[in-house]
Every structure is written in C-alpha cells, then in structure tokens.
Amino acid sequence: MTIQEVIQAINEKPVFYLATIDGDMPRVRGMLLYKANDHDIIFHTARCKDLYSQIVKNPNAELCFNNGNNQIRISGKLEVVEDHDLKDEIAAAPTRAFLKPWLATISKEEFYRDFAVLRMTKGKITLWNFEHNLEPKEELDF
Image (cartoon, rainbow, N blue to C red; front, side):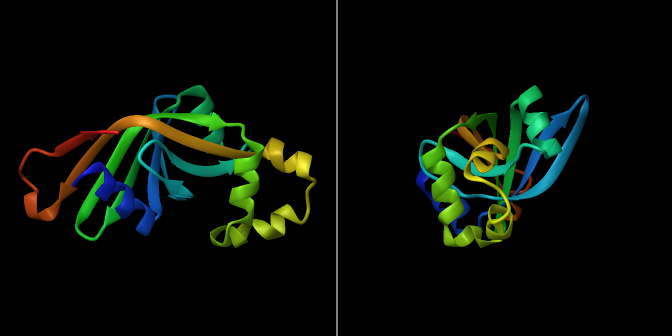
C-alpha cells in the first residue's frame, strides 16, 4: 500500500483502536477518526477522559485500523491542537451529530476548554494482512 492508499482506507473505515500508556500499563480503546490526509490524522476526546491525561503525560501512541483483511497500525506522538476553527468544524460535521446533546448544555467557552482535538503528524505505518501473515511486515514513514 502507498501512503495515499492508507489514508483512503482509514478515512473509509474510520473506527480504530488507540493504545496509550498509563504508568507502565497499556490502555486500548475504540475511537472514531475525524479525518486523515497525507500530513496529519485528527480525532478528538474530552479533557475529562483518562485518555486525555494519558496523552498529556506520554504522547506516544498507536492507532490500529482494520480494513477487511488488512491491519494498518500507525505509531507516533500525539499532540493537542488548540484551534477553535477546527473544533467548530468538527462540532458542525454531520458525522458528529452525537456531540449535539452535549453542546446544547455548555457555553462556547466551555466547549473550547473541554473538547480536546488530537493530531498525529509523523509516525511509522505498519501494514499486515492474513495473506502475508508470516512474512516481514511492510512499513512506511508517515
């Protein structure tokens, strides 16, 4: 797969698993990608979540997407993005209708404070599939 094929695949199937570190223990949870392109991968959480605290303490993370028989793992460092325009864009996106009830109960200032956008801009992509299960994994720089 090329980088462009990876980006297309993860945008088409945006559910992924995110691994973080909590002290000396790994933590994994399901997430929903907002968008990806050839220079960043963007998703979000709330600052009150354990996930957010874990990323602040240790930004090293791995994202794992499944696209049919293909597994796409992307490891690197996450950063918190403080961009109000991007937060507004995410909140208005049709794929984020699940945010509407929460947004109706808070002020814009609370939203900007409590809504955390996360981004990975560099990393290593590891590709794996059942067909090539025992062969060396294919790796790409992101």
